Image (cartoon, rainbow, N blue to C red; front, side):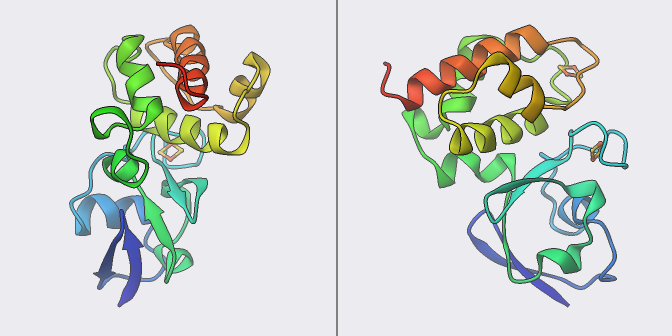
Length: 158
Ligand code: FES
Ligand code: FES
């Protein structure tokens, strides 16, 4: 039995310790915001925060998060509430109409939120380096615009 905190709640999973965190979240805890894209830490669709750091949950064993705090897209606004309970990144994503099919977007949003926590005013280069995620719909330029907008919101812009 592995115990950890997910979106502020104590959770237990009776699974093999080497089972990837992504599959424990999706199959055992019914938390399906983190998506499966590649399974080899290449696409970022499965990104969550573990103790505040962005982690590709397909490539970390659930035993590695025992006793730690995991935040998924479902808990991002709840843990960092802003306008209408949304995180600034979520608000900026909506304002900029970033998603197309949407499949990759939870991973980008989690990576962007972690970037802005570490670097409140990132350059385009910072964004490209920190968000090495893959979007087959090609939303990259909209994502850059939205990250700059989120930075402005977090800096106090209306
Ligand atoms: S599914 Fe985890 S990085 Fe692609
Ligand atoms: S919005 Fe479709 S894969 Fe990124």
